[in-house]
Length: 107
Image 1 (cartoon, one colour):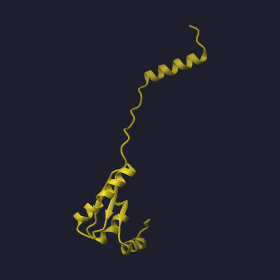
Image 2 (cartoon, one colour):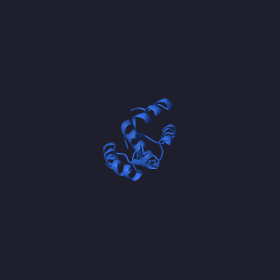
Image 3 (cartoon, rainbow, N blue to C red):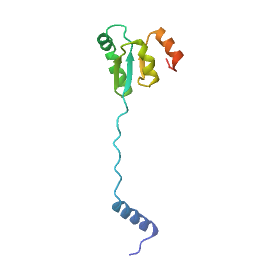
Image 4 (tube, helix red, strand yellow):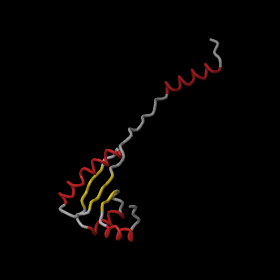
């Protein structure tokens, strides 16, 4: 059998690929959900209901799941930001000013 160098190279790689199993590729997991926090200006159930359409809209536009949570107290919001447990928050101007003095927040 008279094979040129390219044919030998091709046959070598074909045999190698057949012998060596292909690696199993990891299934790409969906990105972690974004955590959206809302301050309690009314009852938590009312705030959740009012912000639910925004949650669905952002989830659709960003192609990510959004977890909506209503803060029980304003005092705990800075802690949630510091611990990086929230990504998006809707706060009043006073609380925003307080947050900017404690941590770095972006409007």
